[in-house]
Image (cartoon, rainbow, N blue to C red; front, top):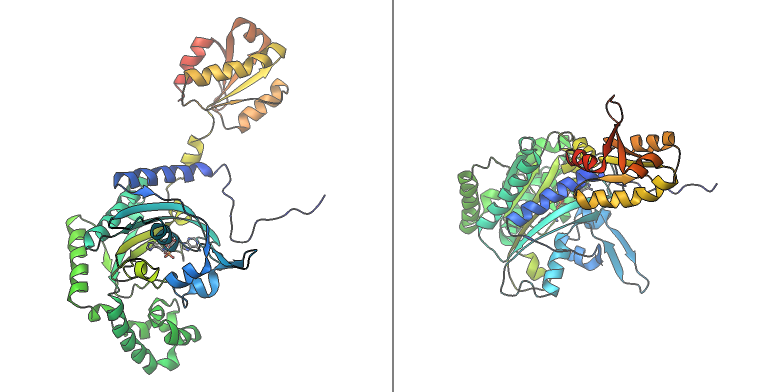
Length: 423
Ligand code: HAM
């Protein structure tokens, strides 16, 4: 036998026994997106490498070391998308969707980052992304946060998530702040680790995000970006806060909240949990007003977020209940020539009469004993048993697979009424 080929590290199969919990979450997401008037956009998984370099930023972790980049056959440099914001904006600009109009969009799909895999961090993972274009005010920032809150409530995980918000100001404000920050960290350069020293030259704001506990006191003393905000950025942030307060959204202002992607300006936010260990950021996003122009569009505004589906699903209480609820309710066993000929016709009739019934038909023959084994393994609640006698009499044996109960013989109409009670 030849050697089995394994999946790539950090890229996981979602096996059929767990697919229903994904389907459940996806159906809630779709419903909530519809409730706010957001439309789905489906985007390619591969884009030109240049798109990510220009948007996420050359000196971010993602672009520097995490992208799956390859040359295609004609030598173009392509990249498996590490996130969806850049591709979504590229598509909107390409198809003129932002021409004198606003857009509220969402997408769902695989993203790829060559990170060190651990629980909650994968090389292929799934995001729901939500992007809103052409609305400059904080009302849309607040809407996205309320939309998130509704998602958490509908998924029953609202009490496990904390919202943190911050304002990163405009590009000009950030530049002024950057100079102050660099001056401050230069005074403490001996205490910085190697990574932070490198970032001091390239992306000093990211030092604030360092996970190194030794840097905590220095970071705590660093100047605050919020102190550099001008009146209009401050007013944007204050107005967002007022709207969140009015809607009863609990949040923490975290002046150290920076993001790992360069395109953000003004509002940024993250939903965090303590329930998942190190990978506690379930959902993150913010405003990225400058990016549209940076990607060749007319000056306009944008705000959005993405949530990690794997982390979200890990937060569900008893996700197995969704998996169990998707198992077949009935398994049809047929033994004998007449019975085997009749079984598929009967199964179709039952499916016609009972929409919503999940009925698995035994295929491939077998003795009663082996068919019962398969019925049990299917997870079904009951076995429907068709022998030649039943096929002749137009009756059906019914036996619970989960409880110690004897087998009953029912007419087809009685069987239909019984199956109806299982749906
Ligand atoms: P991000 O913070 O890079 O933002 O990712 C958003 C979420 O995706 C994270 O909070 C996390 O839940 C999940 N995630 C990220 N990397 C991984 C990984 N390696 N394994 C599992 N889950 C992961 C963005 O991607 C932005 N595009 C969000 C955005 C949209 N901003 C504006 N619009």
